[in-house]
Amino acid sequence: MTRVTKIFFTLCCVLCFTIAGYVTDPAYAVMKLQLAHEQPEIHPYHVGATEFAKLLKEYSKGEMEVTIFPNGTMGKASALAESCSMGTMDFAAVFSIILEAYSPKFGVLTMPYCFSNWDHADKVLDGPIGDELRASVESKGIKVLAFWRNGLAEIHSRMPIRTPADIKGKKLRIQEGPSYAALSKAFGAVTTPMSFGEVYSALQLGTVDAQTQTINNVYTSKMFEVGKYFTKINMNFNTQPFIMSMQLWKSLTPEQQDIVTRAARDATKAERAYHVKDTQTSYDGFVKGGGEVIELSEEELQQWRDVCKPVYEDPQFAGVMEIFNRIQKQK
Image 1: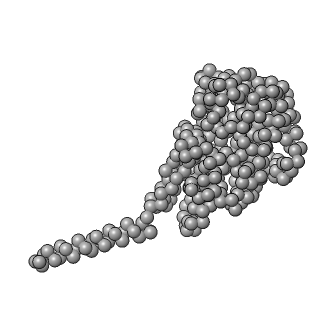
Image 2: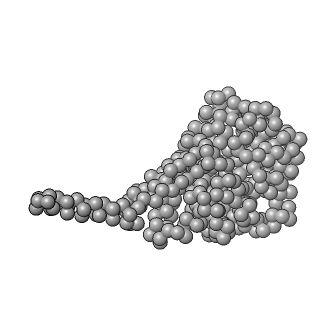
């Protein structure tokens, strides 16, 4: 072997060992993560998810990457929450009512007329009460990173509805959970729990007559094709938890936890800002799609508030009402 050949061989060996060390060194490893939700790509959820993925990669200098799975491709919201709890899903955007199964305290977020407006909701959930709700599910394997905006829950239906009397006896789709079940009972409706992904066909077939729903969800899922009426009863400002696996959280270094927290915080600002624009776009799109938005007078709105009183008085919500009353004082 010539001297030149020996030098070349030595340099190749050094280079190989250097590359091998670079790839296997944990400091250079890329953490591949998954985020799932049940909504289409034009929904505020997806905007928040996309922004979170972008910021997480930026803040971690490429060491943390997120792949997003929208449209329920990884399961329904209840399954996603369970997967996060078990550590088999990293991040998810779910409905507040889903977390009632992990902590009854989350029932306060689906109590009718809990918040007066979006600023009120954001202020409460970004403060001590929000921290209390977050802490209540951590022992169940769920870390709540932020509260995103889903929309204002109203009545979407196949027939015109103006007063509580109009919905009495109608088949009302609700999300599964005790607070919505109590609300449907107070309305005098025939309660029909089902997942979001089943609602379009149920309205189309007449399996349900109406649903409590946001204009954002109705429009992005094209439900104006099967239910042409949307009644603005201003019932619930739906704030939805953006969650992660507690197992994943505990496995992160303090520096990585700070990166995740900052990315979630900044993505929430983008999600909420987009929600404002998306709400108007959704109303406009609903009308252009042949739908009718029914505006109510203050007298008519009061009828809806009054019919909700039995929900507040239900003994099963005594603990939730204690939080509800604290929220009311923060207006």
